[in-house]
Image (cartoon, rainbow, N blue to C red):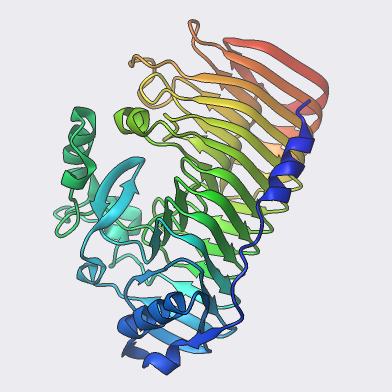
Length: 435
């Protein structure tokens, strides 16, 4: 079940970028780690000098450095030494002028992500320091529209601005005319890499993000390892590769405010326009703790997802909902093919280990029936979940090929719910339920 030699081949070719042995301390460019001095210009100068010299390491010594956005250039490693913290400005105006980004799978020009690169090669964020987005119930998070995170009636929020962006995408308005920044309530992602080759994020701790933490889009050769994410805010997905190829995520510890790792490929009309899948992705040896899907495909997956391998991960906690969560329907469309999971240890899930329900959200109201096939799950132990499997395809577009083997479910509250699934195979699957 599943050709795991392909996973090994992906790991072998996603190489760690190499950088010249040159250091550019930000303190040499005027930065002060006192938590008050604005170090935005010093960081920009250090990155530019490093790139002009042919690359190297922009080093951030121990201390707290107040800053606005950091834009990386080719062959630059932003290295945070132990005890270093980049503390990002809470003023949205600091993240202007707008840059090319994506919001919920739709391309636009919006507030700059806090750490950003576009069209660069061999870039990195490394070290044992901290990236602190400084978001809370009074800054950034209330824009989500969720009372849990500080929104109150009368506060402008993202759903007030979303219809205009969605209409532009549906009408095919050129991306450069989709400007939604100053005055809009689309929160920026924390680390975002647009159209880059050779991306490394290693060792750092990420806290208090406005929205998604690590978001490579249209990238190739992405390595994310030994990263700790602890950011419980709204839509605070941990790691979201979108329309990327050759991605390895390993030894990361994630407690997120939304999905821990969410693989995406664009949304609806814009996803069909860009039409680039996410493919060749390996997730291994991670700890995924909180909140919705541990491993999620979608819901922005119109461009398709294929060849995903997940192995040797520890999943679960009292606040985690799903193990594998596949989110699509006939409005979003797209496909998920050859998704393989093995050697997983799962403690506590509030809902299903595997959830793939085409009827969630908009139901069957669109013209783009999704394709989900060749899902393999083996050597999985789940201590507790609501169900082992919730799988509901459409009668006209069933889920095709769901294979579970050598899986043990210790305590289940309800029986599986399976509708319109062709090619269901269960071998040596054990468990109990109270349904």
